[in-house]
Each structure stands twice: as structure tokens, then as C-alpha cells.
Image (tube, rainbow, N blue to C red; front, side, top):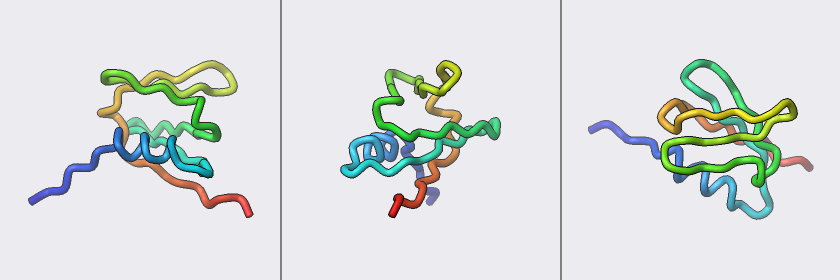
Length: 74
């Protein structure tokens, strides 16, 4: 039996964490988006939007292959 990973639920948990811990969203294309602030991410329907220093990135939730949580600052 294969395990299904639900990145949407994982993202919601990470965005709601207190204190917030930065993370990266990694796509099947190899693109990587840093999330340093939970307010920089919006999810709706089948799409994720991540605000970036030079605009915003739009991608489908189905293109997410990994979420890399960064070590909290000490």
C-alpha cells in the first residue's frame, strides 16, 4: 500500500505554527520557493501563490514534491 502525501495539510500546519519556522516549497520542475513569512503564501482551489522579492510565483498544488523546513534561528 503506497502512502499519499498531502502537501496542502502540511503547508497549512507550517503556516499556522507558532512560532513560525521558515521553509521552502520544492516543485517537480526543480524550482524552490522560500517562505520566510506565513503571510506571503495564499492557497485556493488548486493553486498556491508565494510572494517573492521580485513579484509572485503561482503554481499548482499537484506540482509540489517536497517541503523543506529550515532550522529555527537560535
